[in-house]
Length: 417
Ligand code: SF4
Ligand code: SF4
Figure 1 (cartoon, rainbow, N blue to C red):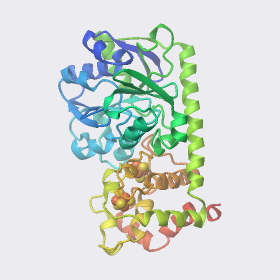
Figure 2 (tube, helix red, strand yellow):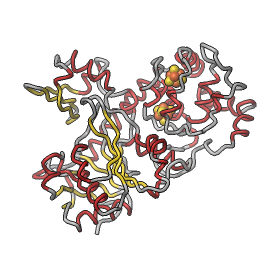
Figure 3 (cartoon, rainbow, N blue to C red):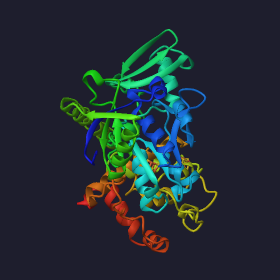
Figure 4 (cartoon, helix red, strand yellow):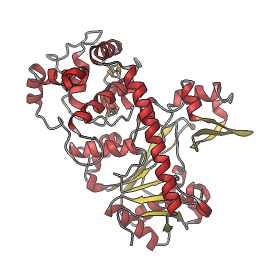
């Protein structure tokens, strides 16, 4: 019997999954087991759409369809949590299995706190994530840095610090550092991300730390909850999955990879946050950047923290309608509502037609608030600093001292101390 904290190597015994899946097919096998034994009603995962740069979310109810979802898509930048809330009724009365990367898992917790997702009905299998690449930039990068037609690429992966592509006639890898120095590589929010192994999921899976004869043939699995342990044990009992204890040396290597990722994230945080300036300079920079906003609401629509039906930014008394450039209050309202809980998923930046670095601005504020109040979003069910404030209280606060307090603390490091 496995238990929370166990570290294992896992692989499938299912011949069909073995043919298609990577790393021993453990994740696909776990979902097959969950579907076939009615542990979940559906599995919600990402699959390749039109091409490699097109990640499409799919709901799978028949395990025969799982094969086409095998493998990772680094050029897909979807966030699963908001989609479960929007299109699967927040798993209110259906049991859903979801494969999640770190920011997905964080989004699930933030929406669950706000009662928009029923986590009791969700099983999360987390996968290690070193970062994703924006699809538009990926195409440009492959053309310019790899000198390869992006349409000829049929596979990509990030391995040992390289972004590797396979295309008709060969394969090529370039170090992620080199790509990022040249303005390509991972999305800016991914560079700053420290949620590399999503341990708030029920199982945390990946290839880091799989060494020896099992390298490339098994998945590293960390058991993170009793629910995860039960899923794993059930799959082993049914014979679809085999496990063995992880090699201690592999465990050490996994820790080192994660540690190196943290250091890199710190480097990027310093770089990006310093670029935003401090105090009044930061405020000026943010006002300048956001002055391009066309108030299309896309950033609000995709954000896993935004869930209000009556959004305050649509209140004419707060933000005069039809005014361009948009009143800065529009952005101040967003900051005051969600900066404490931003999970740095990058969605708001990805969709912004005005190319405003929304995620950077919000993440910089979140990190400051975390330093002040010690609250880390997305890791557990601990309540956020401001999410449960009643709408009328929030309005009063914005009209009185609350927004000033947020302004002082976040934009003015002197007032913070
Ligand atoms: S997505 Fe960009 S342009 Fe649209 S409302 Fe948000 S910040 Fe403004
Ligand atoms: S503000 Fe942007 S980066 Fe932060 S959680 Fe919302 S969409 Fe993600």
